[in-house]
Image 1 (spheres, rainbow, N blue to C red):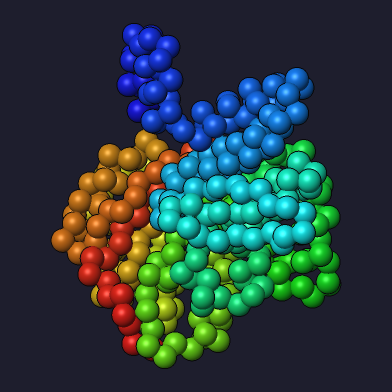
Image 2 (image 1 turned 90 degrees about the vertical axis):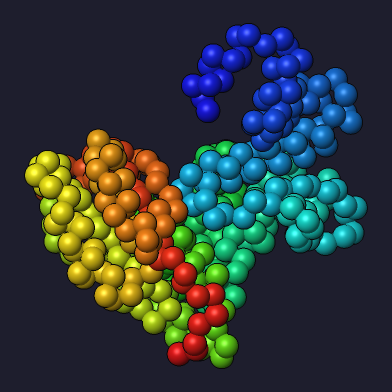
Length: 348
């Protein structure tokens, strides 16, 4: 898309350019509009409330759009701000394709930004799987994702967010929420939080259990986190268990670390998936490799088209740990999802 726009933009008139940007990047356009309104607010008092509204909507919606590459199943609802009088409680709810958040116009701008961001994440993120999670698990996910949002879009308000949200939820010495937030930070450094953990929770949310045992689901999610932590902390070349055999989630990671293995043949990986993972009824296979091996990973995926659909292929930045150093670099990920996975499943 960026390559196409590079050739098209110089040929367009100003009105046509504005329409094109509004169509392809409405959230960025709203952020630019907010900057204009911020300047106008110095001369027109009425412009300030419009600046706050569009700055909030543009930044939050743009952040969510940026996460779509990591987690395409994120909700498509947009944030919409509505102003309420000082005596009305703040509220967030779904209305059509928007998450509507009602804020008090008289509250400080930074406070409104934080409240809106947190309410948006709490209301929209993982709505289906959250019905199966413990309160501490839900809170940990919301706090961690909201922190990432604020780091990206408004770092200046992080101290207020810590004071109002994060510290109260994690200050107890044995706080389960604090433990989850720490664990999620470990997963995120290695690119496993959004790309694997949240993805599997989304798949869990797509399932319906007749008489589900929520206590078992909660324990499985805990086991899921404990399974991923050693993988996130592993050094390049180290061996670790890469197959999760849960009652509600069954997935495996296939890590292709050494390019020379693929130079000879892709057949060892084909054989491993066919002989070890398919008979185990693995629902999702995450293939991790160096970006230069993209073509061969696609060849591996094509060999399983009849049973598993390649639902996503993406490159992202992660931390690689070596014996004496840590390096940030690109990771290539292909996600294979078993075809025909039933929505309604037997309760355990």
